[in-house]
Amino acid sequence: MLKKIQELCQFWESAFEPLCTQHDFYYIQNNILKKYRTPTLNVDGFQLENVEDEFLRVRQCLEQKMPIQYIFNEAFFMDLVLYVDENVLIPRPETEELVFLIEKKLGHIKNLKVLDIGTGSGCIGIYLKRKFPSWRVEALDFSISALEVAKKNAKLYDLDIQFTQADFLDWESERKYDIIVSNPPYIDTEEIRKMDESVLKYEPHLALFAEGDALKFYKKIAGFGIQHLESNGFIFCELNEHLVEETMKIFDIRSEYKKVEIHKDMQGKNRMLEVEIGDQKSVKF
Image 1 (cartoon, one colour):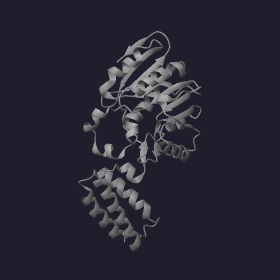
Image 2 (spheres, rainbow, N blue to C red):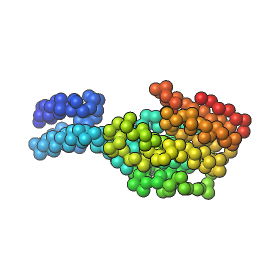
Image 3 (tube, rainbow, N blue to C red):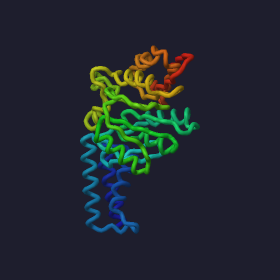
Image 4 (cartoon, helix red, strand yellow):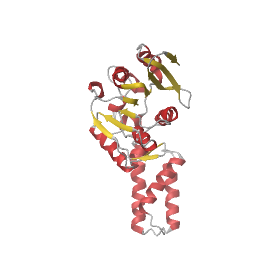
């Protein structure tokens, strides 16, 4: 039976070759075999048939441009394995760099209060709460379905996070925060033609597109921060690389922010914004 499994996998590796990398195929293969494999590898003929059906299902999904993360409802973020579906964005490496920036900058401080705006899968807030248990994390999203995903992920790691359902553009809080972090919708609808088909077809447009004004969430965050940041509090945001200067200006023109700084990602693109409230203004690009 082991030989039959090997032959089956070899056949499907060739069948998947035009659709994904070898690395991705091994991930697919391991997920499928894990579902039907017994500890002794005694797979009977019925299970083998199910394995073949599952390979076929996954191949059909890939032909329809469905991301692997949605096929298996699994995404990796930092050291987390998260549940994802089409109600939330798939976590990206750029967002990992954003939370690493926060960790590097403020990880030595205890008992910070964090607001994660547009939490989606919960990846940012969940990582920070797991890494820094003393921090109090509130995660906000407009989508009820997205919040269900985020709550499911928080439960996976047994984390106490406050989840809030609200439209941030019309939301006010009575609380103050040490950190406001967000990967907000920042894509103008004019950029649609440049985007990957799989993103447009499957990922939630509500989390991608800022209709009418690609900068409207940053404008709201800038004003919100003045009212709701503690003394020497920070804002960290992911950026649209094509609107970096315009986004900087939103914060730079406000005298309440003493530092406005852009950070590059590992590809050398300007992708992260760091803002600190206070006196003695400085701007870094």
